[in-house]
Length: 304
Image (cartoon, rainbow, N blue to C red):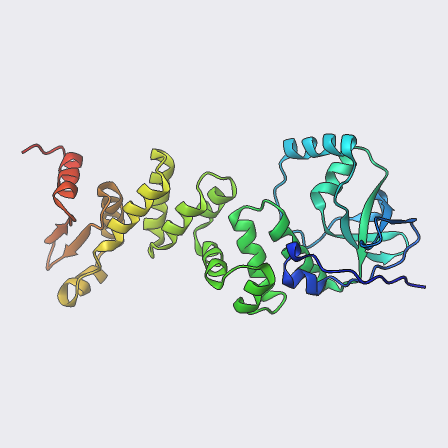
């Protein structure tokens, strides 16, 4: 017979996760251990019975951090139980707590305390994504990917997603926009080569070639977020011309477009190449102030 015990939902898990997690604890063959009168029952489950979470949003685990966690587990034990769902009497699937599970295996434990929840595949995906977003130190791309999965695979709208994870809609939107960046830039975010601040500045550049050029400049010159924002602002400040000028820009060859991109990055402002009839044309290098003009002159190595 199943044993049920109603408990107060913890606000730290977020409103959405609290609604998803069924307060019913499923009885199972492993011995039940009561944490306290106010807490749900905890199952002590053999590690060999627990399978990894197929919906795990985290893709990179720091081996050094896992070893440190394993040492802590050896000394202190498991402070926070993992959460699983039961497949059958001797098979469980992890919902959340993969780092604790891996570290427990490193610590050569035989069993681990766990909450057992009832959940179908979609509920499991949603619980795993939300709990990991809130509890784990995911990088910005992992968070963005998790948000996207919640939208597409769990059929959530952005407003609902914001409620689930306790974030404003604008915050959710900013993360989702990261997924539109080129793969090289996304990988740099994963590896902490650039920050979320750098990425948000790069998102404002519409042209992918310009994005990549500025990205390489950030890496090469170790630009701060503020300097990156200033650079992007200068590049984006001058919009394409109207009428004949705009039409001529559309007629630029691929080589001239690439040159325009390189020049824009080199001068830190949006350089325009205007092709006229025949092989004639103009190169426009705008400046915002006298100081900005002097900066451009220094780049050209021109002294007055």
